[in-house]
Length: 113
Image 1 (cartoon, rainbow, N blue to C red):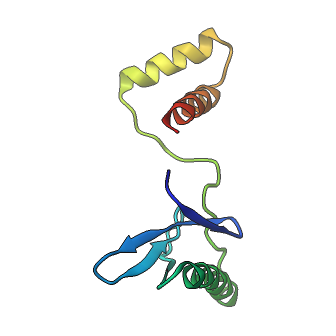
Image 2 (cartoon, rainbow, N blue to C red; image 1 turned 120 degrees about the horizontal axis):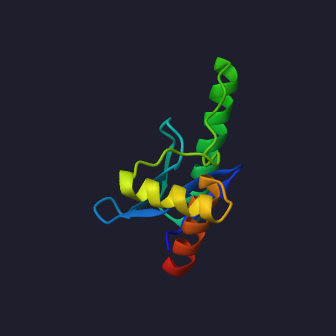
C-alpha cells in the first residue's frame, strides 16, 4: 500500500531518494505541479501542507479555480469487446454502466489489498 499524506482534499505519496537522502513527493490527481520534500517526516508533512496552501493562495491571487483531485470522474479506454460485455452486463442487471464500473473497481481493489 502506498503511504500518502492528505490535506484539504489533496493527496501526496511519500517517496524516498537514496541519492539525496530526502523524502519527497508530488500531489496526485492535479494538472499543476505541486511538489514537496523534507529530510524527515515532520519537515515533509510541514512542506506538503505549505505547498498545498501556497498553491491555493496562488490560484486565488490569479483568480483561477484550483484543480481538485479525484473529482469522481475519469475517462477509461478499454477494448471494444470489454466495453460491450460491460454494457450487456449492465443491461441484464438493470444497472447503469457507471455502476458496473464502480462495482468492478470496488471488487478489484478489495482483493488487491
